[in-house]
Image 1: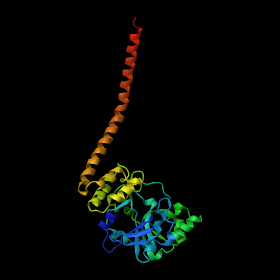
Image 2: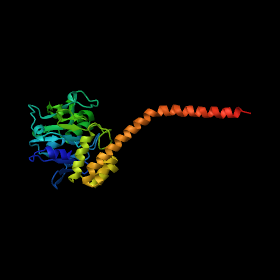
Image 3: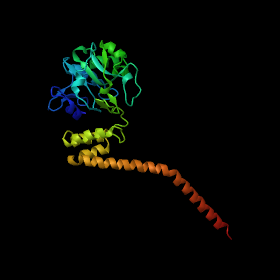
Image 4: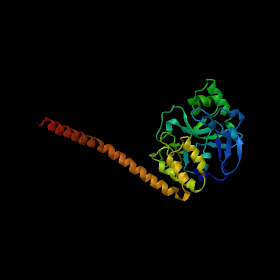
Length: 295
């Protein structure tokens, strides 16, 4: 994701990573590391370790200008400038409504939004802070689902209005003709975990390019592999010489294709093989019985 951001992000933008595990903010392209607000400590996790971090960008920007919240399981395919400058009208933030989402869609609350891509007018979103939202969830005024989906109750609580973001800025699993951001949201088949994703090749190309450019170190990938976050293939690609990563990936892809076809062939022939084996066994039993019956 970071590589695609750098590729499609004008120099006037700063890219910060909210590292929830270390409770710090890391600036991409610099050695700057700042602690996250103390009031956030122990409050960012939910369904994921970063669930409530999506409410943090306005505060991190000092409630000035605009902020765009994105997540790590995405690829940016178009200029971020267009997204950041989108017309909010009278609204305070924007996200793709559940009702408009396209691609492979999970079950959503009808009045909610895909909060994995959000454009904030920071000065107008003071009520939508990490402490305010987590307090409301802990006290029972909001459910976790209502909060995370930017549904009507959380918007009312924060006294903010949301505008619909064009759906091409958060396409789920499948790239459309006008897709500007591709979101690999289904954790059961994300291409860094398992083979077979329809847009897996696109992600692997970005990953191999990042390896060639030195954007990912082996220790980081090894740690992710030990925690079950990436597949053996992804780990292997990080451990070969960067100039060979592309060739190794192609070879691995062919091996997977052969394996799938072999598995399919075995599945197709298994019933026939079973019948042959049964007939052979019956013939053997018949011959054995005939032999025993002879004087």
